[in-house]
Amino acid sequence: MDNKHIVLLATGSFNPPTNMHLRMFEIARDHLNHLGFTVCGGLISPTHDLYKKKDLAPSIHRCAMIKQALVALPWVKISDWEVKQSCWTTTRNVLQYHQNFHDIIISSIRNGDEVDTSLFPVQFVKNINAKDLNQNMAINIRLLCGADLLESFAIPGLWKDDDIEAIVRDFGLVVVSRSGSNPHKFIYESDILTKYMANIIVVTEWISNEISSTKVRRALSRNESVKFLISDLVESYIKEHGLFGTLNNKSNDNDRSDLNTSSVFLSPSPSSKTFKTYQIDDKKINIDEPDNLQCTTKRENNCIKPKVRNIAENKEYSSRVAIQVSENGIIEVISDKETML
Image (cartoon, rainbow, N blue to C red; front, side, top):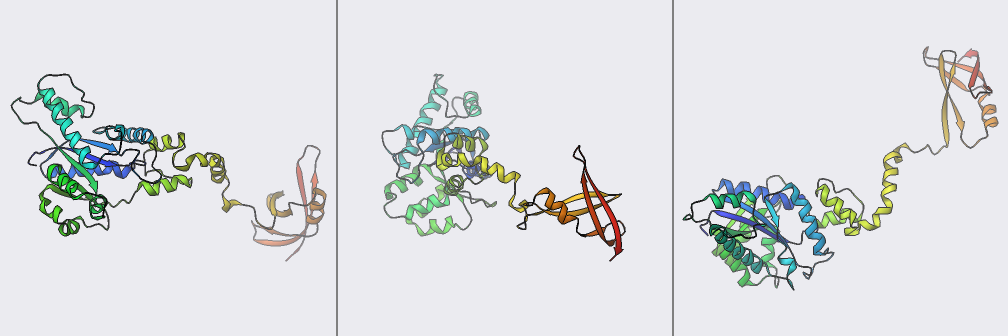
């Protein structure tokens, strides 16, 4: 575990991948760089379809969403090895496969063989080619996880003790803590984790962000905004394929558009009255006309001495108002001012 060259590997359902999944890689890399490590790359390995989890989208969609999300994080790659297996694979075996794969690839590159470097960042491959052949360029695959995964080690029947020990002993952990979690306390209370605590690096996320895939799925199913929780590309993919209940919301898109233009705060008054403005000489007056009355009735009602406010002079008059409509549709209002109130 003395190797300072690290590739971070995150496992999970990524159902869907959120911005917090991506940020884990960023803050982990920053922290490891400060400690003197070199983060050579990152990998995301989504879980197999046979993993028993509620509302798990098919791996073909989860892989596609991860690829869309990683457009913004090019130094991290997706590995579909796990989802291509015939059954669900333990995290220990996922880590071991990728460690073996990287060891073989690095050795092949140094021997001048043509190999598949799709899981390697381009710059890392160039660095290997540029190094002295006698220099050790081995890397260490480390499991990148949140504090919730660390704490899941204590759930009875979920993890085998042998697997936990092998993961921490042979690969090591990079744990990103969240608000309310205490990884150090959990490590202290576990004999296995305490034994290999030198292989556990705890990264504190000081900018609290409680984004979870569960909450994102709930918002999507309710046709609520998930902007800035997941990437726009991922959101577009989800809605295009009707994932997480969004298929049922497509018929509501027009309703949402209507809400944007017709706010409930701008709805008509329950009195069903409207106010129309007419010009009298150089002044404007408002006349309330019930909408449910015929035009002739409105005119009759409005001609019975309504109170008119002279805004310019701040005076009120009792006026008799006559409304005339010309042949070309122009409304003319004639006022006969009477007694000042």
